[in-house]
Length: 475
Image (tube, rainbow, N blue to C red; front, side):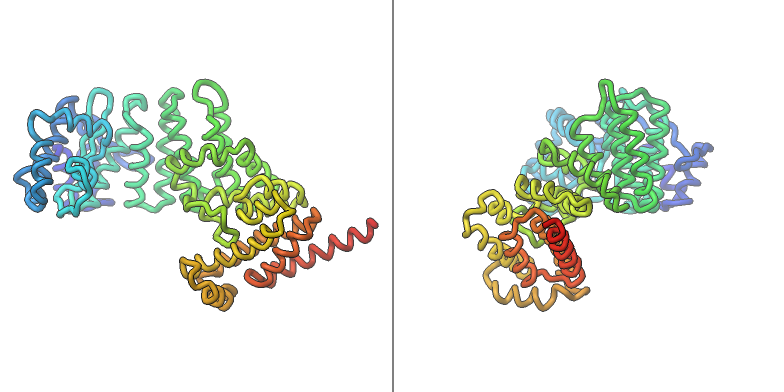
């Protein structure tokens, strides 16, 4: 533990909030306008070799031979820890640190032992070791007064970003994300987002353009997207700023990053019911298969912004906002119907299985096969059975439960039914307008049996009547 850690703990008596802030002020006697007092770097950082030795010493003392944690492990685990912490194996520790700058007790011990195991209680939960130039920031999260130690860690990261140059900080995006997570333990999500935005804006003023700075800008936008209405309302402006700043040069926005921003803008447009923007952003995402091409990377890097449940292309009955690809097609099809672009909807249905379901997609691409038409209802029944009982084994009973419950507002199936009904009605409108009558009739039959929502059906009936009337006038 650093001397500053001991001082802060003693002066704040393990408390966060005002007491911790006053303790920092007493040590530093300085305040800033973003998140209070900044701890000087000389109190936070230690020399190159000293940092690694400190982290090694803390890990060995609390998890190695002689610790109560060690004594609670089985014999094989003990042997492997003894070997790992032997003086000749310091290089192994340094290698682990290079890959995992945060040593979490569960992950670290599982790595050393070579398998997952039930962990005994540990006095130390995590050891952070981050390279800053030729020095290290070392911090320990103790089990006792855990929130206090996380608050101190957040204050250290904040102080680091306020004083060090961005190029000196290894993995700045990861550390900024850890700062955001720490802040959210201490202040509201809204306040945490404001602090992060102001801090990144300050870094913007004090650092040259670089890839890490662009990463922080993208993180700032995602934080606005996920931090409540006040920040969400500023999303469009923030994205316009990023697009302008990173439009060209060595660090210009990549196709993957443009895909992320288009997805965020589509959500923003959907919240305002701006059909023009929904179509513009949605078609950009669908064109050149951008969504699928970048899906894995985007979900790994921006999981807090993208709804990630596994896509269900086989299913038409589902919640459409739990997977971001399905949500895009659900949203753009609704917008295209509002814009009366029914041929464009039909094109999407023919080209993209996930725009409707596997059975509908297969029929549209082989309409002469009557067996494919009959499979659509069987698939809808199967969708419902999996939703109700997780299995098609009791199909009749599952359908009875669904039909008895799905229209009730308090039903666990209400949201699924509402979203599916809306999507299916948009598909039906497009099929009628483009004279795909055979499929229209089959889907209408299925809709009336399993997914009928009175208000949606009335809109659909009015739509069909208007088309029929218009054709009569034309004839």
